Length: 218
Image 1 (cartoon, one colour):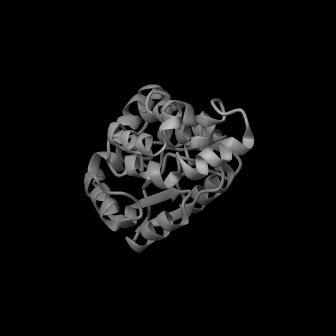
Image 2 (image 1 turned 30 degrees about the vertical axis):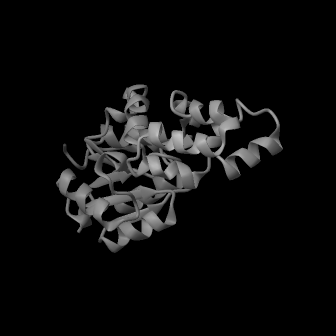
Image 3 (image 1 turned 90 degrees about the vertical axis):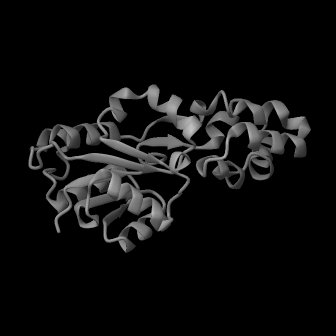
């Protein structure tokens, strides 16, 4: 079966994301910054938000353990958008070109529901091109759990073989392949463009938006 739709991850595929982007603004000393991100506001702690836990609960628990860092911990909630640096180079043009060609676009993201809503509102030029986005914090499932892929395919109205999945996490890519999707381990926009061209989605390698043709109607 030929893929006819593209399903994107968001963090570090469409947008550059790192907890460090916020905290390097708040902690001037590099060693103190490294220690804070290693011991206090860690990825292991943050992933609870992607799983659906509210920041009010997780931050209260963490502040109880590290009261001297209360202000820094509490900053993540209102300043979460500062963990996102901007669009990954080349991806805005690539997404726009696919959309212009009528290729159906979707996303599956491990993302806190309470953080995603305000972020999405700041980026209509990107996200208005997507027909649907499954957010882990909304559905209580996270990649690479096969259940989130099954839910997304059903919601998107796609058979697995009709989807081309793009993610920067190899475990998520392998899980998508196990579900029967074609999948690409994202490293940069150029490599993804070449992979899309190889699928015949109307994109000639190196030509970007100029070469898109409407092979797949909406």
